Length: 172
Image 1 (spheres, rainbow, N blue to C red):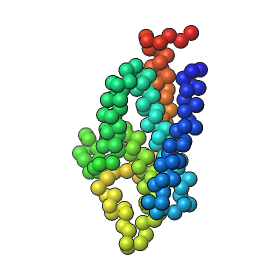
Image 2: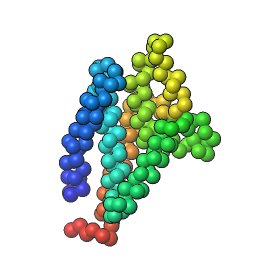
Image 3: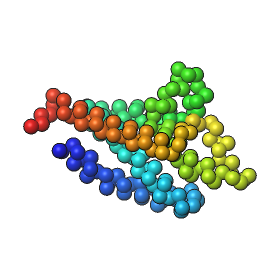
Image 4: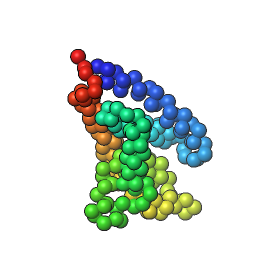
């Protein structure tokens, strides 16, 4: 009951930070306000999956300092494998498959399909050509969102199982 209530109680707080982020950033980016709800939903899902991964590792390892070090490596892996730095689709197959293990791959696929592709129609702003150096998911928005949410739910479930069967905590 504690773990479920903790997960539910943190949801409203997790919705505030992306809202503040987008309100500050939106005027700088210059995207139309019509896509703000979709971008907000993607940002919330991305933040929730990040928090799910963090929670899972905190439930596995009860040392906060060690978990922070591990999370840095995990999130850099997720960004690298997700195509944030290089196009993983152009890498050899034995490396390129790693992109499917990263939630960033699906998250960035959602961002590009909502914010970039629909507005890439004038000759002045060829945004998709700039994105050729990166690899983002080309699956449908629904599939990408389902994979993102599945990633978060699996991490939450693993966190619960790690707590349940941990020798450091005893639940009655």
